[in-house]
Image (cartoon, rainbow over the protein chains, first blue to last red):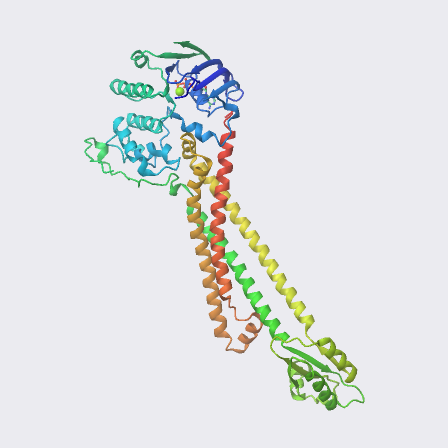
Length: 226
Length: 324
Ligand SMILES: Nc1ncnc2c1ncn2[C@@H]1O[C@H](COP(=O)(O)OP(=O)(O)OP(=O)(O)O)[C@@H](O)[C@H]1O
Ligand SMILES: [Mg+2]
């Protein structure tokens, strides 16, 4: 990757409140190192999704400093934003697949928006779909997919661009344990090939299968277990 | 990409609507297309009417101008001790001395009394009235003799003679034609403004209906230009269809009017209509104008939607504060 181990994402004393409500995240200071793997965990409502949204720049912190790929998030120009987003793979808790596009088209979307020619990525997309077990569902529209299949389509879409950082929100929330294990192996493999991975989950069974750094959110505070 | 549909599960059997590999990212059905097409068609129709009216007016006015300008009139008022016939002869001789004058004809007494008949009734003995006599001076095509000199000599040598080169008429005609063009331009501008506003609202509606799509595009790294182009392509098609329909409607109306007026010009009151308005013929320039207009409206539609999307997406970016 880079010559010097620059942090992918760095938070310094970050706080977040929605509107005039209470601060739901306080004094978060941590870094996501290159090529690192971490679980983000905590009880429901602890703010895992909110923290991920801060990392993918869809929320601005109420205070503190967020740095992404070495850049102060508050100073990133609007025209730069698409290029930063292309280095971030995101799996949303609610998938956010486009219902009128097929699985294939959904997964190819990050490449298509870059103006790339379809012929240049078609086999990559199909291969990735086979890898996540959706080889038979390529031309199906999301409303027909099962919850687990949607989840895998959402994961494939996050991976297709080989992002530097993968942010996944409950990526195993809708699948049975064997499939969850398979998906975890997928993330581990992705991590081995150089991507920093952040997986938000409250599935203790999943975390027990792989020994990795844990970021634990509780009552707005973050504890880190390396 | 032919996948063996060997999936044994029931869902695989559900007839699934499979989109083409390059299906629109913004679904066509999600845009309130029919209503907007209709509005654009109406706007294009109205705008085409103004173009047609301008074409007719400018055509007719220039026709009038050239007709009127090909003739000037010498008027000779009766003076006590002047012999009218001699005055007419003198005036004619003087006029013919100028370059560019083709011929001079005296309007005879019978014709003068016919001209006056509607006002004075028939059976008049014209000799008993101090009716001025007229000489029609026909000019060579495009010639402009020195009217000032002609006027001077006539007034000096023929008592009671005056020269009317219809300048006042031409000026008045010009003013009228300009007024019509101005009014038509104002209407045209308003129609275009209304079209733009309609497209702005329709685009906002489409963006709202496709909020999820825009958000996802955003997250997967689409830039503003890409997102805008996804909407713009629909609006371009929509604008083209609407504008073409409206323009075609206007063209059809002009063709029908042209037929109607040429059929009627055989009748006496048809003559009056065509004397006033020409033959309702819009002419090639008018139809070309309509075609240009159709392209213009389609372009304006697409551009407006693009700008609206740009603005909206920028708002999305700046709205990502904690207070969302
Ligand atoms: N857009 C919002 N506006 C106001 N409050 C919000 C918003 N989104 C989340 N919250 C609040 O912030 C807190 C944290 O929510 P968040 O979704 O980040 O939790 P979470 O850890 O992801 O929960 P879960 O495990 O159930 O997904 C909750 O109390 C929630 O009600
Ligand atoms: Mg959550």
